[in-house]
Each structure stands twice: as structure tokens, then as C-alpha cells.
Image (cartoon, rainbow, N blue to C red; front, side, top):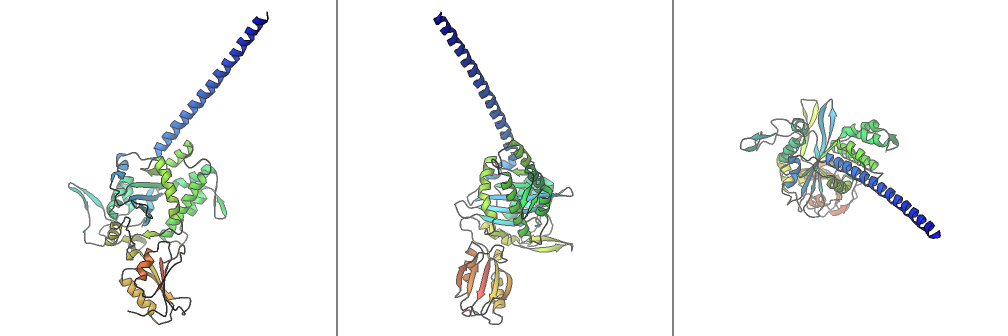
Amino acid sequence: MRPKVRKRKKKGMSLISIRKQHFYFLVALVLLIAVVFTGVRLLGSYRSVQNQAAWALSLRDASQDEGTNYLLYGLSDQKKDIFIEELFLLHFPATDSEPRLFFIPGKVLLHRLQNAENGLENDSEEDNEHLSSFYTPSHFYSEGGAKYLIEQLSFFLGIPVHHYLEINYEGIPEMVDYKGTIPYREYTLQGRDYFAYFMNPEDEEPLELALRRAKMLGNVVEFLSDEGGFFSTPKLLSKVAQYLSTDLSWKELNDFYKNLDPLFKSEQLVITIPGTWKEINGDELFFEPEWKKINEMTANLGDDFTLPPQVITVEVLNGSGAPGVASRVGEMLHEAGFQVVSIDNADHFDYQLSQVISRVDDIGAAKDIAEIIPGAEFLKDPIPQHPAMVTVILGKNFTLP
């Protein structure tokens, strides 16, 4: 009888083992289905971020021999009208040289590039430095969206745009509320309150306002990335996709953000395109660009890029006590094409040697100034948000030419 008992016991153990195998198989199958389903959702969400229109995907086909150009801009919905708040052109040289960041005011006035039977033509005279008709980036976007805006700006700058990133600021409250609240300064804010700080100027110049907004956007991205990364969940990504348009794939966008992070810090040199602010119709300021200077600047992009004098801001300080010397040097620098933003006395009149001080990390601008000031010491002392890129202190060794 014992052998029979052993056989029944062995058979029973096999049945339990088989049932366990079935159970594990079913669990694995369920997990596999879940992974596939999540992957499909993520893939769909990733694709929803990228603009896959033919025109968007063809941007990168333009020559990148001199480097790669990214157009970054933010827009808002004001009384149901789209308004381009600010734009940045980010240029990465073909080699590992430092990238260049250019600021384009949202209220820049542009000529229109017209479609003609034989190609594209400008509606203004080539030798006319002043605008005969007024269009802003907002006008172009309202007429033809991102495609038309990029086409016009590419013509305006004289260089191709290889990639673009559009951010609709109206999505900021929803992004913040997705996580509840966000810390800002000494406050903890909900989405609408954070958005109010974001949009309203704080007695800032246009560039200062644009850079603060860029920093606040970075805070939102870091805030949303706390758990698993910015693109970790389909739900979050689907929310972001409503307010984001780009030709970049999700992987390219992730890599690009890593490169973008240090660019909006205080020590980064940001170059405002040449031009002046003017009142139009007596009640609103617009930015009138200087076409020839912009073309000279963008034609020089690449590994050997040097700042043109017209975008280099200089303050001139009298450190010797000699009457009128700072004003004379200011006039001399202005005639050489530099932007002289301030002429004043130094903190004392006992400077024995003249000094040329770079207030930004990029010392190229200060070197150009130092060549004009004989016998000057060359120093580097970056100061974030300083009104001038270069400080000139005239010492007792300086004599007027």
C-alpha cells in the first residue's frame, strides 16, 4: 500500500506546482500587458509633443556648417489675441565653442517677406534703414502660426532656424496646480498667483523681464521633475503637450533642456539685437531694429564670432580728476561704434593706471575696448545684472590722443 500512497502524493505535488506555474504566467502576462499599454500611452504622449508637420521636420535640413540655431519664444493669450512676449535665438557653433544667446524683443518691428511668383521678396527698399510698414512677431503668428513666424524671422535675421520651441505661458497655472503649489521667493503659491508674478513686470527692462520669466519657467520644470523626471508620466506629458510646440522629439527635447539649463544664469552673456525703442502713435513703445548691424552680426556667427561694437555696452568713469576726460573718451568710444551707457566720476580720483574691466564672463568685448585705451590694466570682475558689459576707469596715466 505504501507505494500507492507515494504515487498519489507525488501526483498531488505536481498539480500544485502546475497551478503555481499557471498563476505566475498569468501575473507575468498581466504585467506585460500593463507595460505595453503604458508604453503605447507614453509613445503617444511623446509624439503629441513633437510637431510632425512636413515644414517643421524639414527645418533641420538647412545647412548647419556654421552651427545650429534654436528659436525659443513664449506667447500669451491677451483678450483672445495671441501675443509673442519675447524671443531668444540660441546659436551653437559647429564645434564645442561657447553658445551665443540673442534676445529679440516681442515688440520688434519687422518688414514682411512676401510670396511672389519668382520666389520671396521684401516689401521695403533694400537701402532703407527705417521701416515703411509695421509688423510684429505677433502679427505673423496670428496670420500663419509657428510656420509663418519662423519663415519671417529667418528672413529678418538672415540665417536659418533649425529648431524651434514654443511655450504658451497660459499653461503655467495648470502645470503648477498639477502638483498643488510651488515655492517662490518667501511664498508658497498656487498656479494663478505664480502666473501673476510671472506675467507682470517689476519695473524691469524687456531683457530683465524675459530672463526672469526664463528662470521662473525653469523653476516650474524642476518642480514638476521631482518624481521620475519631467516626461515620466503620460498624464503630465499630455498636459504639457497642450502648451508646447516643437520640432524636437521627446528625446531631443530632454537632451536640449540639459544643454539649456546653464544658459539663463546671471553670468551668461545675452546679446540684444541692435536697435532702439521708439514711441509709435504716441502711446506705445516698439523696438525698431538696425538692419545693417543685425546682418553684419549674424553673418559673423560661427567659431570665430566676435561681438560687434554696437552691441557692446560701456560705462566710462573718471578716476584721475582731470576735467572733461570721461566725456571726451565717451565720445571717442561712441564714434567707434560702442554703446556708451554711462559717463560719471569713479569712486575716487587716485587711480594711477587706467583700467578696463569686463563685467561679464566673456572677455572679448573688454579686449576690444582695451585696445583703444592706451596703458590700461585689463581686469575681469563679472557682476550679474550690471548695466554695462565693460567698465572703463581713466587713471592719471591716461592722456587724450
